[in-house]
Amino acid sequence: MTHKPLIVITLDAEESGGYSPMPWYALRQNYCDAVLEAGGIPLPVPHHERLAQDYATLADGFVFTGGAFDIDPALYGVDQRHETVTIKQDRTTFERRLLELAYEQRKPVLGICGGMQLLNVVLGGTLIQHIPDEVKSCLAHEQSNPRTEPGHDVQIYEDTLLHRLVHAAMVDGKIPVNTAHHQAIKKIGEGVRINAIAPDGIIEGIEDTNSLFCLGVQWHPEYHISEADKKIFAGLIQAARR
Image (cartoon, rainbow, N blue to C red; front, side, top):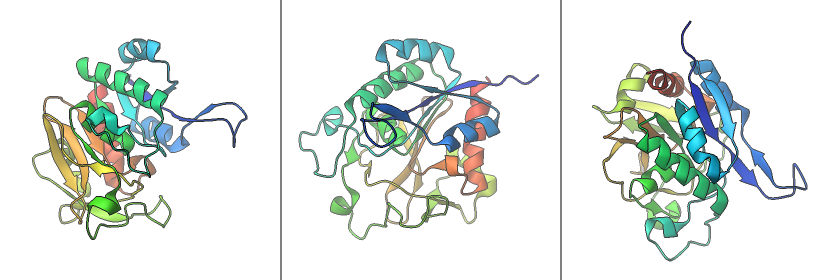
């Protein structure tokens, strides 16, 4: 029987109100569905930093998810915080430690949207705090149409892990993606390679050149907009089986 790798998935966190009068965790079902369909066992985990080492030891691979929040600019050496920036300190503190442990143990990592931004920051990079204020003639990176539909295409760079994963699904070197972010990578971290870019020059994908599988994408492949998205999760599961 083929080994089904255990994939730790990070949760979002919300304060009281809405779903519950108490603080609550949140995760869209399609994150788990994407891991399950690719052949893995999804395991969402709560934000207990003291358990980060246990999670890292148990897991065969990791998905660091997105959410309606931003990474504290202080973590990449910037004192000024843009008025649009919303932080979730406990979540970021936990995810940062878990990502460091996953990286140290050389286990496969997939960072999605905010998860990609965290990966870049942990590896020494910086972020654009609000795209419309820093990029002239930028695309609408927070698309108005449903996230189940494409927002724009991205160009995939050759000789990258991402290219190897999705090349069969590309058309003219591009794939369609959805888009739901107001921040983006500014300076790439140490050992980081850009693997995808939007038509306006925004970095849409990165990977760590020192790892077998350490990949970040700015879009949300768990929606399976195209076959390329499925191949990203398939690649994660394949790497986690090693």
